[in-house]
Image (cartoon, rainbow, N blue to C red; front, side):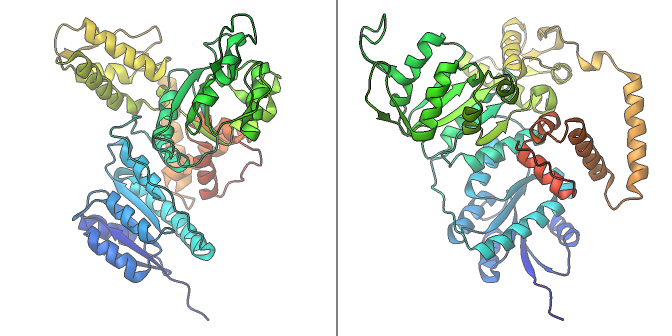
Length: 477
């Protein structure tokens, strides 16, 4: 009998206790695990062993985990690397993913996520070795500060997706409720792309009258219609080689939809009143708070245009589904307000922070920023108290406890613990699997809708479905 194929995993971490735990946690007959506490030794070991996977902590000496990823990927473009650490910066997640990290795990979640992530990573490493398909990506200048903020798992998935798709030229459709940060994500996609040095132009399709929007986008010739007193260069022409962000794309008039479709198909258009064809190499990023699938079903949005725009979709979860981000967002906005005011630095009292974290934020991140701006104006001291924070009419969740729901949750937890003792899954994994299964069932196996309810991306949902060996819906998300 032939020996099983062995795969080599290098684990680099300054914490020797963690190295010991990870070695035992990942131990398998087909895996050789080598540990080190230094980044330079990890680089040498990876090269000498031709390793299949590197698991690196962010905080290492004599250089950090990001630099280690950079050096390894420069020499081994197909290498598979996982980054772990206390990831407080959005830039860290985006930078690591942009450099080619297979995944980025927060240190507090490794006990649950490490093993399944490593299993998938080793499968990917084997496939890449067989394919030997090198994909070298350009290295644009990084932005100097965080563009988007969030520590929640849902936003970590968004950051990873930005890192993966920013380098491509494919259209991106950003969905989410009003005020959740769609334009900020669009700007991040541009800043991390090869087009970062070119123009970035944002157009709100709902804010421009229908009779002027076509001229705004494509331009017009002098005398082409009443009021056209001179030639106008449209945004597509201005933004050649750059990025054009079309916000509220669901409100695009029907007559403009057909012309936009032509640009997406051929890169060509004509100014109003002209027969000359103009070519523009613009990357399109669109955003909407509408359900475009339903708009297509209602014949309010062209189906062919929808599929042209929906090449990559990034869904931004509402703030009420990621309340753990409220504190870091609040700190960011207070710093921003302080810099604008050139002096007075306000901070939140623990009671005020709790006040914010138990509000449902129907206006999302935009409402949080506006609320803090108002609080800073109204506050009489340097510490914001609950009385200083004017919240809207939506009831605070903590102010109206619901004992029956709490009892139901407690009963469900006990049921999962009992079921887990009979299954080959940890209680949390069993709960996640059942929640995914029930959600897919309630949404008639609709992947995109289920992902939206679960506040994760369709790609992440596909991974979890595969990890739990559930049936993958055949419907296109």
